Amino acid sequence: MKSKRLGEIDKLKGLAIFLVVLGHIVAREAPAGNEWYVGLKAAIYLFHMPLFMFLSGLILAYSRKPIESLSSYARYVRGKFMRLMPAYLLFALVVFVGKLLMGRVMHVDNAATSLFSFFDVLINPTSSYCAYLWYIYVLFVLYALAPLAYYVTHQKIQWILPICFAVHFIELPGLFALASLGEYAFVFFLGCTAGEHYQRYAQWHEKYGPVFVTLFLVLFCFAVPWGVPKLALGLISIPACQSLVGMRLADTWGLLKQLGYYTFSIYLMNTLFIGVTKGVIFKLMTWDGINFLWFAPLLLAAGIVGPILAKELLLRRIQFIDRITA
Image (tube, rainbow, N blue to C red):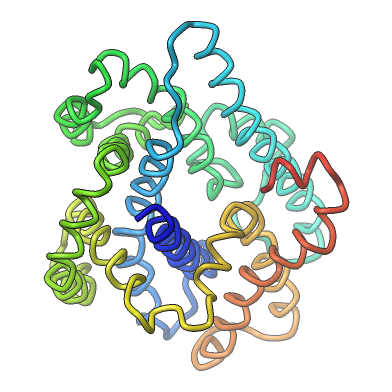
């Protein structure tokens, strides 16, 4: 069960990061005459981050070790900080400098307006010049809160779910990503619950997987016009997508598993490569109309292949950066 589980989770991570990059190829204004992509992106954004958060909670529960003292909790938080935040701050700085410089010679999405813009990544990360990195910031906070949740529930993490579900519907401010914390705490701790009881969860989604796949595909196609709530589609997508990647022919060449291996690197760098590629091509032509049909695959490839090559050919040569982007 353990090896099967890890294999499925790697492939599920690969699918999730593919969807993230697919949604990032258009940051602000959509190309004219391509309403199909606008609808596709809107539908993807209704479930891909709940899926990511659920996986993060599941993996945390799978690998967690008991924390029995304040000193061990402090070591745990420090470890999670060093795992996530150096990369967050480093790439926030890279994007900041890159946008200030490149904005002088080419089109730049969501440009940094001044030197003070850098502090937005700490104060208001979901609305900063590199808002795409918000997931890392929120994930660190949830990681820090998880042991406290386990403690107050006497290791029965499912007890926290009703509170998180209620908080999901409370309108919180964007400062310090509080709104995103409130939005995703429920699916994160639901993932923790699934990780704690994985055998039962696996039996459940294997039994009802075809039902969820069918329901998810129908709702995905009509999610935007029907106004399907994000939480609803996100929850349905979890067993559906896990069933899809578990199918025999779902990843014949191991592509999803490879993407899962490079998830963090792709997440950190995909918009950098997409932005540079977009800026260069914009010098030559527009992406409106039929041009977007070849523009989109090129940007998608840049956002996936670029970070993988950068990781293997450049970042691995610098020990500290290799470690924080693993």
